[in-house]
Every structure is written in C-alpha cells, then in structure tokens.
Image (tube, rainbow, N blue to C red):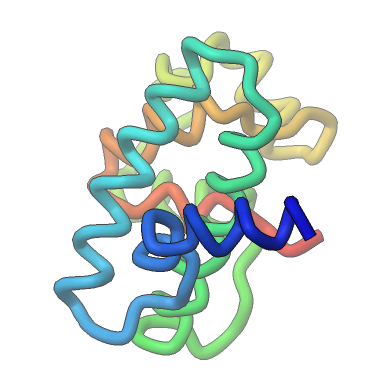
Length: 135
C-alpha cells in the first residue's frame, strides 16, 4: 500500500513526461526534458534516470514514427542515413571517436553509447530517440 501511495503522490510530476506526445508542443517539451535527462545521466550513475530516459525516448520515437517514418529504422541505419545525407565518412564523426570505433559501430560490433547519442543528436539536430531501438 505504501508503494501505491508514493506512486500516486508523485504521479503528477511524472505524467507530463510518461506518455507519447499528442502534439508538437508536448513533443518539443519532451525533447528539452530528454536533453536535460541525458546530461544528468552522463554525470550521475542512476538506473532510475536511465530507465526514465528509455521510456521517454520510446515515447518520442513513437510520435516521430507516426509523423515521419513508414518503417522502423535501426540506430545503425539512422546513423548511415545521416552520414549519407551530410556526405560524411567514418573519419568525419569525432562525436563517436576514431575511424576504427565508427567502423565497429557501423558493422554492429559495438553499440552507440548515451554519450554518442547525445552528441550525434545535437550535431544532426534530431531527437535522441531516433538512435534507440526496441531490441
């Protein structure tokens, strides 16, 4: 019963961020919040914050998929698309690191980290949610 009471007590603070955006204003609000949350998770080891980030990213992605995408795109496909769109090679992504690391990520041998996602989303002006996958 105590857990239920605590959840209800704090629900008003959580609910604005725990749903799929219904319009552009809510979408923009979530993008700002996710950026702040990513900054937080870079400086604090907090599983709850990471879990919240994953939930919000999924909700943002659901909104964007309804608006922009007709098919699901993996984080690697998204990165490849952005690289093609901006005519970039593996040497042109200091946000990720060395050409070798970029190659490993593009070949599926390594995954993008939260730090990579944060930097890439800022560089390309996209939501961090496009780099998250349901897998």
